[in-house]
Length: 264
View 1 (cartoon, rainbow, N blue to C red):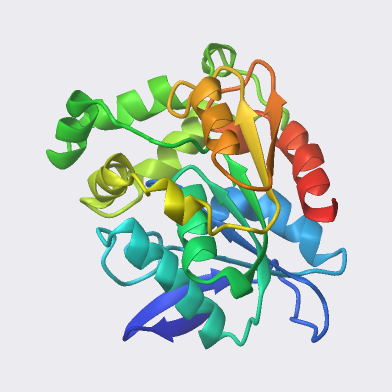
View 2: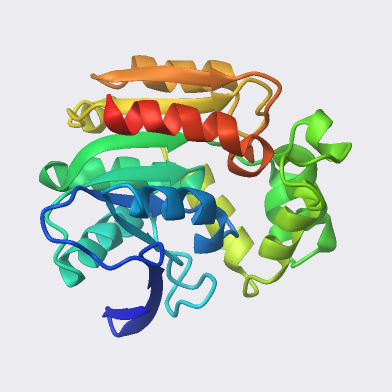
């Protein structure tokens, strides 16, 4: 399905279920160089259990038109525009990586629209190495290789997937490779530059749950704990032997912790 926001056609999904008035709303926001398909397991689950589910391809990603290089503040405001376009008064917002930073910004700017935050693989700051940024800027294959090297725990790189016959690494690679030129650099750059002041983080009053892989090198566990300390109403649920791409690496572990975050 598509909705028009800022004169751009934006692709979104409701987990293949109709929206039902009065049900709680939950929005899933994807990370750098990813798209709405990364949330398929989760959106289908919640859509069949009494939730109105929404996930989308961010501007410039997947099937959506628009500028992928907007600032984090603009991206946060864009989520609010999406909610207004579909008459979503408020929602639980779940974000992975850059999507988590976008969710934070939405909660800062529009506290009445965000009931809870679930942040997967998120820390602040979220610096990106200059070599990674430069490779992404030049469209170098090295950037995709580094995405895999940094994104997955070592055990995941050896192969093996909870879903038999499917490669975790190749799944992630294909999603990244099919994105438009410049999308990876735009996302990495906006994450690298995002450093909100503590006074802005203090404005987030809704419950926040951080779900973090203990072996995440993109958003290290210790830095995620520091973020939790800087948020007024937060907690951390970790996943052992797991890296940054936790929604692909450990889908069932993420599912259990996300249930906790949504219901509690």
